[in-house]
Length: 181
Ligand SMILES: [Zn+2]
Image (cartoon, rainbow, N blue to C red):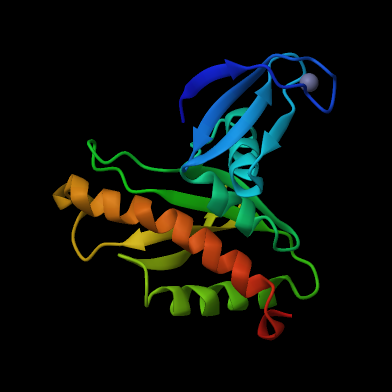
């Protein structure tokens, strides 16, 4: 996402007339240089909001849509998330905690159902691991590789990184479907 130019448009939030135009996936987003308000294409505006939220939480924007989708599940809080690094052959992951409340586990079951269906489209198979760490039960969503981590190559990591957005989109879609409830 790069800065294109400064247009003379008026911000609907504060009336300031210095709006920067950015292209996000081919769509234009106007950002007020005074109050930070965003205007323009709805999906692109949402992406810039996600980018800001990711920065605030110290997370990579590449993994953040999946973090946000997971946190739509009740009582779920993401503790750590990484988009990985292809050149260093570090795979992405999301680690989260689910508060022990009535029905919380049912959502884990639904998440696994969603993953099963997503596997028709993802480049990697994704697995949910359970860990006891930091004095609590945590789940880690990770791509599965049938070889030692040390033998991975950058393309395999990039495949897993491309899955992150797809998994987020599928999860959001599935959460809105009748079988999830
Ligand atoms: Zn403004």
